[in-house]
Amino acid sequence: MVVSVSTRNARCPCGSGQKFKRCCADLADTASAAALAHAAVGKRIQAWAAVHHRDALDAAWAEITAEREVALGDVDVELIAAWIFNDSELDGGETAAGLYSRLDELDADERDIAERIAGVRLGLMRVVRVAPGLWIELEDHTRQDLVRVISLGVSAHVSPGDMIVARRMNGPPAPSLWGPVGLVSADTGPSLSALIQARIITLGLNEGTDAVAKAMHNASMEITILLSPALHRPVLERRAA
Ligand SMILES: [Zn+2]
Image 1 (cartoon, rainbow, N blue to C red):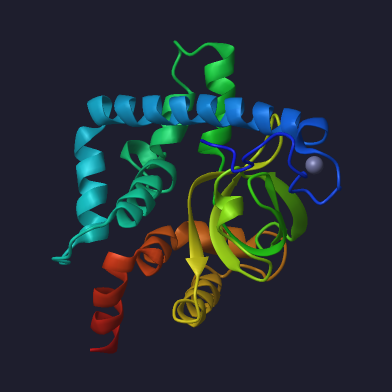
Image 2: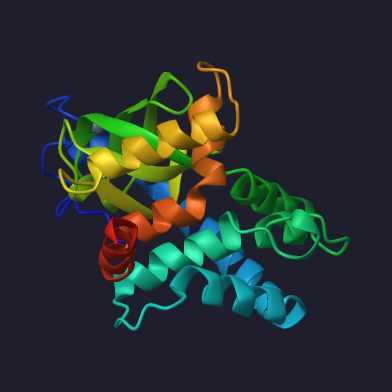
């Protein structure tokens, strides 16, 4: 991942007025190294699951893309892959990341990162403040708190007021976003709210604390379809029929 601060002598994107190199450069370097380490573990989870749970992965892929003869773009594939490895339950009701995180042969660092990846869940968040190339301050409607996530990439593409569907990962070095981020549009927003509300009722969840998080996890496939440009249309047409 590339930090979108072009020169270390430029003013820091955090708004401090300081030069970047004297302000948030260390933070960006640490976050960049951590993101690479996290991504490497993510790749090993996928490679391991592809060998040991091939049929379950194929079934998950078939389930989410069923009956849709559409060309999947990069965004679609990223969203679907994140759902398959982080949300869909493979053999034994566990996610691929969860199964991997409990393998005996992992060393402490690998297990720590894998456990944190396995712990991420879909969340609904509103962008409050942004330091492009550095971090995003989010109002997390799922956990009902305000959080600043390190985000070297996504932070360059969102603005205050945007609603996003993303997976929040715990630090160290700091909270970050895991996997692709879905921007909630005027088109998908109402459908998303309706879906979450309906699922809260269906599951008999009490409003408050973690109802939204549980409902979103339970509806993760439908939410992924809603956010995927290629999968989105056929679903709405079918629902209207
Ligand atoms: Zn700064």
